[in-house]
Image (cartoon, rainbow, N blue to C red; front, side, top):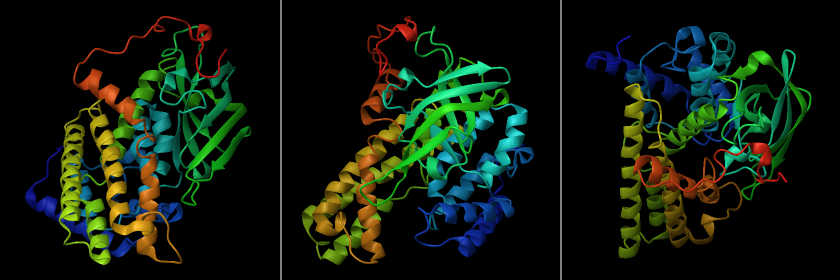
Length: 399
């Protein structure tokens, strides 16, 4: 299938997308999971969901050029699928890359149409930045695997139907080996999900406990004991997804929000404030261009690489700068609101949620390490445990 569109076809598709979005988007629904499900279902019904994925797997069977056009047009409208970033930006491409034909036919159509929601289950109490220290174990029992262990900081597990889980299947191998990836139905007996309550009033994150959870052998995703390679690929997709949200064109959403508040607060003409606003404008413009480059590389057929950490890290830096400027401009309204003032609530929730930017999806320190040794080619940190069996290591909570 051609990956290019004629100008006429591109414009016709853009008009189709614009007509759909004009009729189906609503301001303020971007963080509502039920609204996201409903919108995605309508998107699928219109043949606009899973644009580059094959139709036999529930996609639209179109090209990456169509997806680019969709992203460009979508930036003109409220974002309706913010709660599906993990399900669609991380789990879906991993299913597509590593799943068997049977798995893709079984799981991808419902994922694409949001009839099911998926989450990523990597972090553990003793394995955060060093995910390879994970202790959750999976043991084979006939036609099933039995999973035992705990995951934590699992985004949206409490509203998800499935999780993509990594667990240790061979502790006799070094910690980066002997790991496998599984598809887990979160309604299975033995799965306990406990939401973590956040400062902004939400419960996006969860602790998840697995006690003798039985998973069909057919739901091993990818190669046994090669889960670290698959997990690394998923992390790359994650960083591209986080770092390139809305990457259809150059945009400055945080700048726009700050300008609004600067006008409302009567400080728009202050020279220092104007300088800060322009810094935000420049940073967001640069991030957009980096994100567009990442998307262009994927459009050209390249799998996400370590360069995705650039966008992820820069998103965190922008979030930190946004916090400082918002506090200066809006004062108390930047961290608290009263009543039903949607503008104050949007600013405050953006402010409070920005605190997770330097942690979620990999800490800033991890991103800098990746950029240093895998993008810039600087020497890697010394690893003394590279050839030591995991069972012989003193890592995380293992003693």
